[in-house]
Image (cartoon, rainbow, N blue to C red; front, side):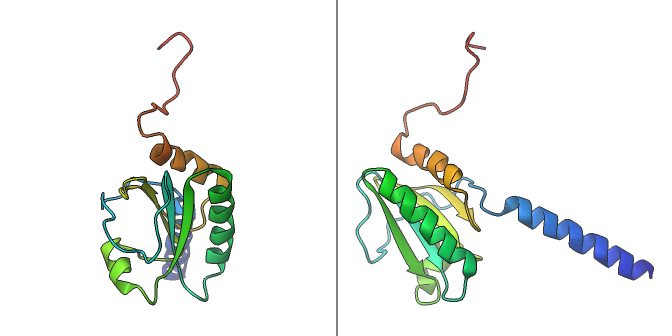
Length: 144
């Protein structure tokens, strides 16, 4: 009984941790994306999505990224089939789908997220690529 209880608690904790990390943007380890994605990059930024055929969250991610790319001029959305482009999967350390990369106008990776991102989070992360010289940290009105 004790072993069953410990397993249940450990599984629950692991599930909560994975759920919390899902769709969170983080700085990417690979800084430059000087590879051929098979399509031209956007003028200002590019949203690169790694998907697989049977991935349900990939369809929702495709919709979110497509909407964001349509809202922001010069931003392009590219979807890559992870199963057919294993070279890119290894290059960008894609461990699950959907995984999204945000590239700036030079093709440098500025952000990476695994899982289904929220639309507001994509727009905020895209700001780093589109407006790289703007300080996005909030300051107190008194300058503190």
